[in-house]
Length: 83
Image 1 (cartoon, rainbow, N blue to C red):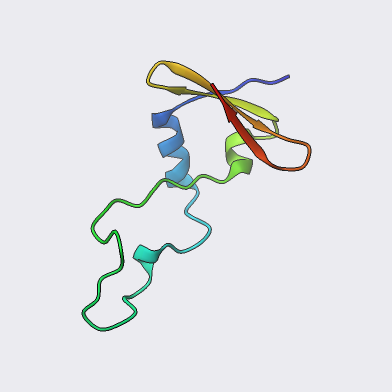
Image 2: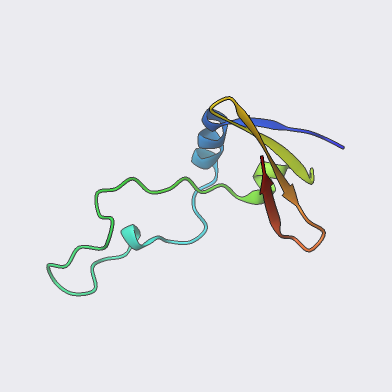
């Protein structure tokens, strides 16, 4: 089994290489004149395609503040994150 360890910095770098697949509320104009979308001014969350994250593997390790988390891809295509 192939194991890949990602740090938050490497996930952010991946995010810059692969733009979000779907527009967010911050990308769309307000629904009524003068009304701002919720969360306006807040930074957009990072979006990474799972194919880029897993790179053919079924499991990756994520180092978050010194704690290792395991992100697994199931045979049904679902994601499971465990500590």
